[in-house]
Structure formats: C-alpha cells, structure tokens
Length: 222
Image (tube, rainbow, N blue to C red):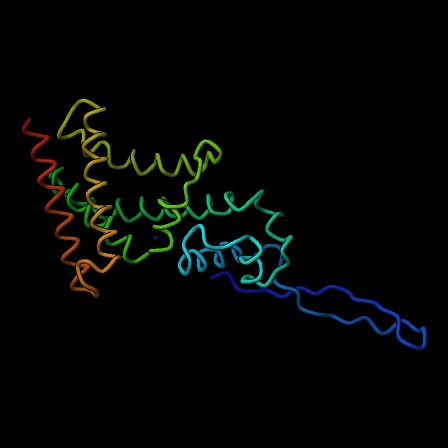
C-alpha cells in the first residue's frame, strides 16, 4: 500500500533590560514547507490509527507533526480535505494490492477469490488507511481526486466480473457483494472474532476467498 525532517528557523528579536536589541537567535519551528504536507499526513495517519478518523482535530495533528496550528491551512482547506488525501492514498494502495493479487490468474472466479483475500490482508496490514478510506464519512462529490481513486479500483476489477456476467450492472453488483463479504470478514478479524496473529489472518483470507468463489459461481450459473 519517509521524507526526511528538515528544520527551519525564524528570527526572534526583543529588547533587553538595557534597551539594546539582543543578537539574532535561531530556533527550530517544525518542518520545511516542502515537507509540511507529508508531515501532516503522517501525523494524521498515526492519529487515525490510535483514535479513528473522527477522534482528533487539525490542531492535534499539527502538534503531532511539530508545526503551528495554522500550518495545515497552507495545504488543506479543512480536516476533511486532509482525510480525503489519506483516503485517496488508501484507494491507491488497494488498487496496487488488488492488481498484484489478480495478476497471472486466468480463471475469473479465482481472480475474484484472490481479490477478496487481498482485501482482508489490506485491512489487517493497513488498519489506519482502511479506517480512513471507509469510515471517515467523506463526501466524494467534494473531492474529485478521491472519487477518481475509488473509480480506479472498480475499473480494475469490473472487467474480471464481466467475464462471468456480461451485463455491466449485474457484474458490478457481483463485485459489490464480494467486496462486502470480504469487508465484513475483515472487520470481524480486526475485532478479534477469528483470533489474532498470522494464523487468524490466513484463515480469514481463505474464508474470504471461499465466499467469493461461492458468490461468483452462483451468479455465473444463474
């Protein structure tokens, strides 16, 4: 699914008790402007991982990044805009993983099974990206780049479903139901209902793959 920190300085002047201006001093005040966006995104993703997408403010993200509370507004109009960029990263990471999962598999049923397993693994390995992508409640009509990133995931997988069902609406419905099943299993895994550790992850991936096969075969035969 790191940019080095660079300190910048600013000038501070004052008047000492004798009325003479003291020498110029230099103090670190956060990150170079070129790294500000990435620093805020990293800090916010950490906070999402700790508290969920609704559990922090831009001011808290600024403090975590080591910048002023006004700094985010140089790049993001509001908190949702920052979360939208993280969610866009989430969709791009999903597309990368799903493309790798279906690559080299000829049977579309097995491609969809591999996609479902990869969905579960993404949720387990990138929980903060998973949460911000699906639980932030973002209005995609506000964020064209976010909407486009989500569409790219669908465009990758819809041709696979259409190998089984020619009707585009029915194929999209098939894809949604497989994704929904994988999503539910991923959430149950994260809640500990299937146990913890690598064994639980592998077993849940296989559950998702079996469910995807069953859904795909049923639809293809109907």
